[in-house]
Image (cartoon, rainbow, N blue to C red; front, side):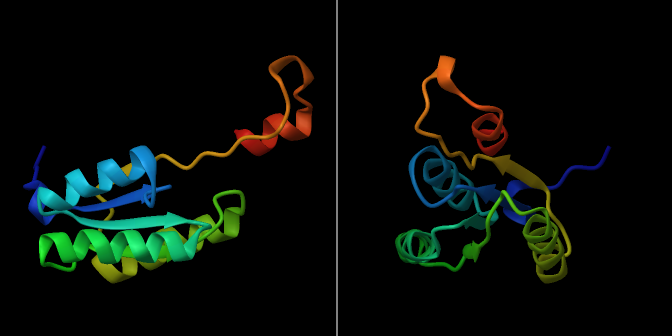
Length: 115
């Protein structure tokens, strides 16, 4: 098995604009990886990318608006990232959302939305 340094890898982080996803994005970029952060909140993504890129004095973070609930958008995201960088070496599937239902009130539709 061939491996390459993290500084030569491309990571895709869903939900990479805030919280745990942002922390992982910062760590990957600090190690030199190119990181595509993707979620529905485009403004947050762009701000995060700008802040981390400025802090690192490098352009390693790239924002991508998409909705993980839409299979066609997922396929387009993967295709676009692969076309741009010729690789997706790491996937951090961090996107998440919640529905306003308690565990015992969760409907099938609510469960499907969260999953």
